[in-house]
Image 1 (cartoon, rainbow, N blue to C red):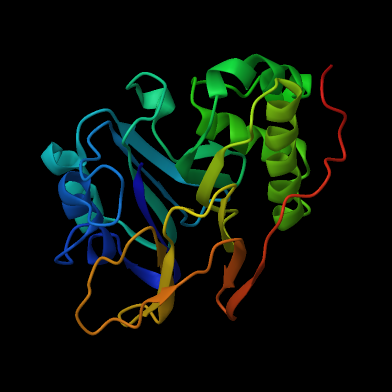
Image 2 (cartoon, one colour; image 1 turned 30 degrees about the horizontal axis):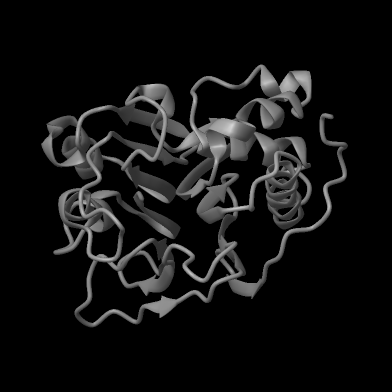
Length: 266
């Protein structure tokens, strides 16, 4: 499983969250404490928002702990909204196109989790995409495909509904293939204004998710595991929850799959 961190608030240097803390995302890339695998060395990525409408994107296949370019960028870039991810592959080659975050227009998305039985339902899920959305497919991961399902389900106008309907499509496709649905979904995504996150699993072991205020920027972080356990006010997000953060505050509510509005491919 992967590790990730996101921030929304006044602009801060990326290093304040991603590289400087004692248990930063870089430290978690080689010694995560709350993941199935302590090592997340199959690439990394950053998506950050500035003065332009879409996010900047930097991804590479090196382990995050060994890339000096990543540390240099984090030291120099300031942003009021950014997402960062270190990857432990559960499927798909180690390539830039398979590194998170993934972007589409103003949206960026990253994921910790897995679609169980993906190799048996991948074709059906890809075939269920509209042509315009399928044309955005660049990599081979289940995570990118789930993001495209969200776009297909109306992400631009209804973020929570899109995730809920995309989740239903995955579960229903598994059932049609004769599989017991198995999905782990702890993801974050943003459009340049709001930051959203979801924590869900079909079993009792949803990947972890935490949020906390951040002193330097007056904003909030949402992370797969805390980067500083000393003096932080970390709040564990319950399973089956959907989170929306804006500069005005944070809302945490229930999350459940809902019937898709688009017909599944037969």
